[in-house]
Image 1 (cartoon, rainbow, N blue to C red):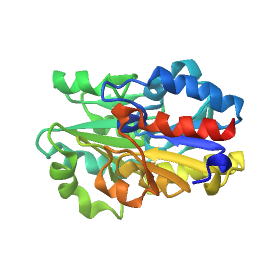
Image 2 (image 1 turned 90 degrees about the horizontal axis):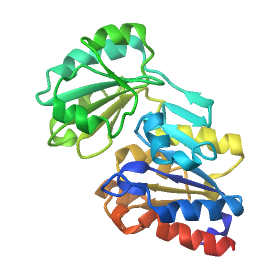
Image 3 (image 1 turned 30 degrees about the horizontal axis):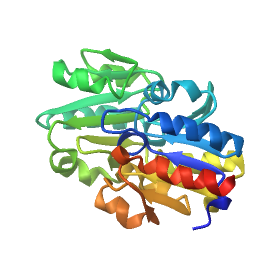
Length: 269
């Protein structure tokens, strides 16, 4: 593994760069400064809302690239590099279907705000970890009719893969459907994924697949892992991710990303 070629590091957030408490380590921030001195760029890529990502990376938010909402938006500082919305009718058509799935909570994600109609306090408290800017509304269909929606996120307290996916898996021709975590499932435009967004960032920076390192743990990371020669699955990753990544590293609670970045810094020193 010749890490001397790496010019861009891309990391998922939940289950990857963040530990199970939702924290970024002080070690990562130290390593980021060293990578900067070596002219290696960093991109955070997540299903989270943009504001939630930069909240976790506040001290470096203007120095990094950010892919948010599973690739529906990409930004560098205040500059929007990419924006891909869902067709309005696709949003209004799927909401009644999702409402009929028991114990399921729907989030409509726009460029700056997330909208929910759930009044469940347990869900609302949990949801705020991922969406800093949000509004509770009476009717999501009314929001969809007047607001450009980038992604629909759906939460199930037990398992998104077991209870949500089977109900909508027949709609894969109309939506990009991603099981993005144990409890979350996301629906986006079929061109809105982390891999396509990463390709746009790579093109902008004139950085190749062979010069890119990516870390991920779940299905919404598949496309971006395929855009990097140095693709790493976390030890805690879904088995499907371990199967497609070229390499593995320790878990998110055991500094899996940082351990590889330490090696990267050493090689470039």
